Amino acid sequence: MIHEEDIIRLGVGKNIFHYSIRKKSNWWKIIALTLLGILAIVGLACADMISVARSQIGQGELFGNNRGPAIRQYLNGREGLPWCAGFVSYCLREAGYELPYTLRAKEFLKFGKRVKNPKPGDLIVFSRQGGGHIGIVSEVYPKDKIIITIEGNLGNYPSKVKEVHYKLGRIKNFMAFVRIK
Picture 1: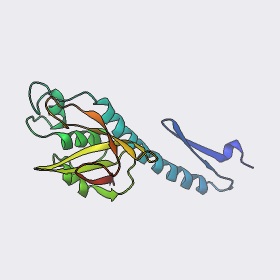
Picture 2: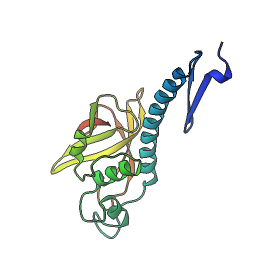
Picture 3: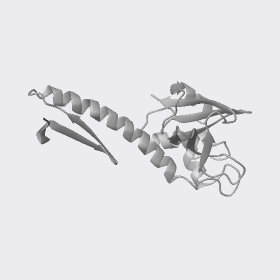
Picture 4: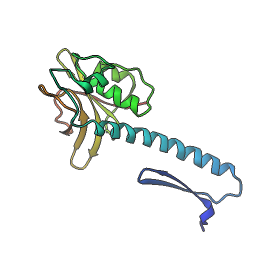
């Protein structure tokens, strides 16, 4: 039988992790809290990165190609450069990740592990002439084989941060999904 005092609850957004303990020693509770805390921190970081990215939807180029206040924010004060990787670097930094800032989409392949089955918070990396492109996976619908990403600098001027829907297995110029370490 589980008693109220034997349940440790740790809230993360709408999710609450439960771990029941029916041992007399406190060290079991410490281990449970530690493990749940790690899960919560990882979950919060992914959720925060997606929240940061979502908050930027609609932001983008003003006054010229690869120019404007949002672009300067993503490019650390600069303008006139491709900014998809700068946008992802910005989202990661704002969510508390300690990764090198980069403007090279393919460089993100070094920052994590390639995975076959994407999850929200993973990155999607593309190849393209002259470099690459990158976005953040925000939603995954495995049954329908659909993912939704948030990407910047995709399309013609004036390019904005936007959601993009892809059918898995039919993603043009797809290189990899990357799970950040």
